[in-house]
Length: 173
Length: 101
Image (tube, rainbow over all chains, first blue to last red; front, side):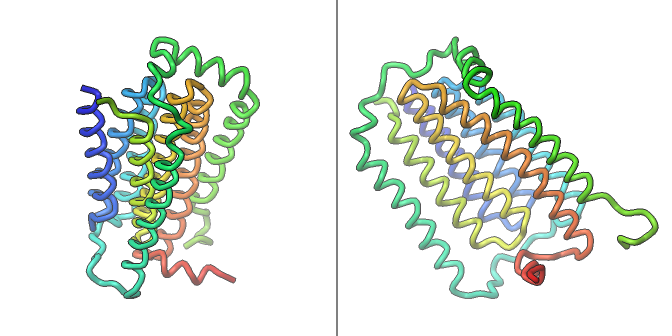
């Protein structure tokens, strides 16, 4: 059963990822991103990270992808990008080689270091205590970083408003 | 036969590789942003896999912070893209080379 969930969710993740890279139309790429993010959320559930799975669906698949779609619609850049025209010939095969090399390197490292992971533990973080454990870690050990994220979010919001504001008086066209 | 931590790490590595390839071959800045999200999610997946393997909640805390920073990064990045594309519609990432001094 767990194997079936893993295989199906991995197929979702990889199909969505390849869709993001291969679709010409940015709207379709955003939908591929949704598929990938849902697959990752399924993996989180099967690894008993229930809170993160919920946040993944709400924040990533909800807010961030909607933000992408908003920008696509707002700018009218939903024209298909013609992928068959390649101004820089060697870039594409070189990129594939580099990507495969990075993946292969990490996979080789993981497979070699498998023994330090040990065998699969019986169950990781207990499911019912997941949110409690996470909150305890967040509000005791990492409370300073947690408070700093509020500063980060405020700065990001203010910065974005300033960046995208149209100036009055036609100075900004 | 249940999936072990190694399987999740291999999946995360493959997802990261797909994100890298997309980042290098696409020219639309929005799609490049989506590929960065793919790479961030690959790392999140491996964080959670390690958190489960070592029975340590710190990995999930790290994922929480990664999500917050990713959300802020997307907001600022899309703001910059809007500011650029509003002035010059149809800009690809290659045209942004003129931004250098």
